[in-house]
Length: 150
Image 1 (cartoon, one colour):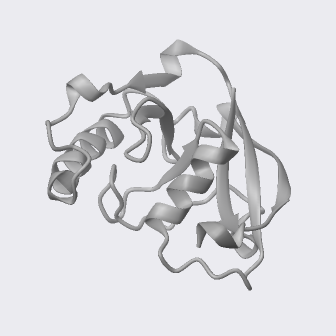
Image 2 (cartoon, rainbow, N blue to C red; image 1 turned 90 degrees about the vertical axis):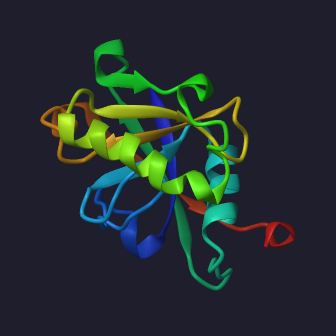
């Protein structure tokens, strides 16, 4: 399976995580957020990175992940609080993600996109025992921001 991540060029040469808190993880939990497509990754970046600067060079990271059901846990919208797309639900989603990270139940958490709920993002636990053997940075591609998105 191919997954996509948009990153500043300075951080695009290896699969690492800052451990910063986000929608599906708490601070100190090391996960990589990816999208099912370049376009979804673009929309997610625009929505969640209000500090995008066109003068910074960005890359699209293309990841190859072993396609196996045993590596993926899927969270559907029916598994989430009714207000899951609202900021008020952020802590609840972090609890769900943190429980998944801690349990090491699977390598990947497949979650609905807040931007387009019918599409999915994939959260990869970099500290899962299956990470190194099943996730590979295949290549990076040059990326540019269409200024109409900013």
